[in-house]
Image (cartoon, rainbow over all chains, first blue to last red; front, side, top):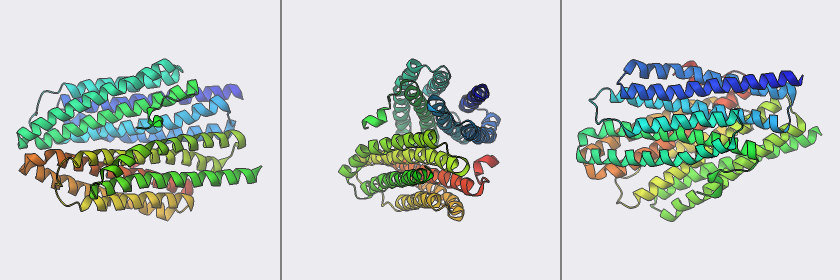
Length: 220
Length: 220
């Protein structure tokens, strides 16, 4: 009986990693579509979001089935609850990929506003945070989880920079407003991807260590 | 034993409603702060977010404790999983209250850009959706849940209107750009509150009916 449970839990972790890969890919492809001005790729990201959503429902059902059939305790129960929360964050990462793709399709109607440097950098950082937060989960690595949380402020800082730079464009030339707004919203989407990775990492830290590093519990 | 379980589950539902009230209040107060140009109220919203976050952690722990001690099955198990998801959405509604309060503090540095009409209307709609989604949960009312989902497009429509109106302001007078941007971001926050209410309502419908109305499963 217990061997079956372990095998099923492993499988569930594997599916969670698959879903993480899909969500990360959505963000990566949406950013490639932006940088390479590739509308069909942006459309593909939007189409494929339904598969990420289906996988979330599927994993949730498996979590409930595991709970009902094995009544796991302590650590195993917490691990399943953790998966339940992770897939929720991943689904929203997928949504951010869609948001970026939609803004990109709007941007492609106009000439390039400026060379894109900071946004692709933010994307690389946020995607790595997401990957590492999942690695921290699978390997029960609290140090890596803590490091992911630390990196969040780097993404926030870049996003502030992007925001203020685009504000200058808008103020100096009203013709740039629509495009600058799209880029500001893409920056916020990337910031949110990093937030989701941070949520996951905070929960992993708590799962492994039993104490929280959630800054949001300490007041804002 | 079972009577204890029922009592504890009722208590947990009650706490979830308390948390929903706090999250809704955060949004309501942030909007009052905006409309009445009341900076101390905006600061209060930001300070009090930590209490919403603590309640989320507290309710999650109680869910896990209920699962570990009673090993509930079928419907009860799904109800607890549902509470687990609801508090996650509620925590993010509280965050949107903070976002609105932060944008408001920025706006209060400048004179009023324009009379606020659509944003307060959006807020009222989004808050009512949130309240009704929780009512649908507590009373296991799938019709109400379905109605909440329908109302989401009304909020989206108002948000598009706000966005395009503010775009005109920005384009005609660059001095309005910072303020218009703040208001656009407040509109997005309210849209997101409505999205969280819709998430909750979709899950309630599924919990009660056993079939999904999630539009996001049908492709985008």
